[in-house]
Image 1 (tube, one colour):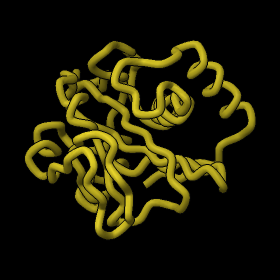
Image 2: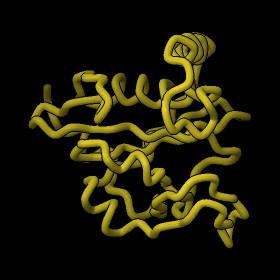
Image 3: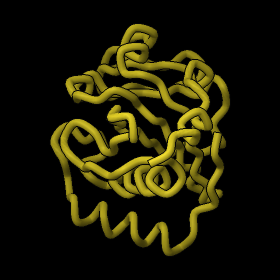
Image 4: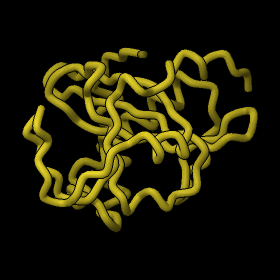
Length: 165
């Protein structure tokens, strides 16, 4: 896991990018947290050997040609092995090879690049939750049908650092 202390400049950049994007289709927060996605994407671009390719299906391309979609979420405490890596069902149509999961801890202004997983492995391992379900551990109420996988199931993000562009 890579831990990054977010600077004011990084926050300002992400807020500007999020504002430019506006509300996107199927957004849970109607665009109000776009900056979290951009914080994750900007960190992945800075710390991993990827080339940006921002399209509707993925955010980056690795040297070996695999495509990467970055999934970011805001949480209140640092991620732990049982922290859920969620993807809404409506987003599973995206054509990518890998997911990278990032968590932004707002009170601490810390971002964690937690790990990655091939999309097909995520889909086969993740449990399905329905709109309105409540997580029995966290009490989180799902507003949309989603897939959920504990962070401990991700592969070490450091494995991707060995690639050279």
